[in-house]
Length: 116
Image (cartoon, rainbow, N blue to C red; front, side):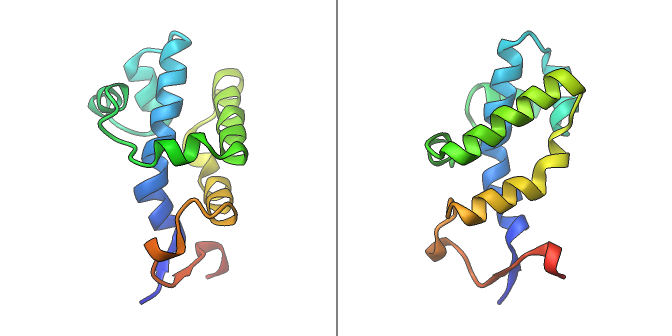
């Protein structure tokens, strides 16, 4: 059965990326409420990110130079331009797919929402 690749990214990759971004923003002095608004999640979710209760693929993401670079760009945009994470979902999905961060054996046949 085909599934949207972006659903897999949103379910498995984005929590780890939110964890990275939440911790970076927290270290820059942002409050949990501000971070929650930026990331489009609840303040209790930020607590979970702070204690690393979410984001199972964190190691895989941190080791990938292209995705880590994009995360740094996202953080810069958030800090300097009031960016929001939702605006970067397609780019993150594309990098995830191209860099094989989700292994083929972890996927059913997938399709990209951009091609529908």
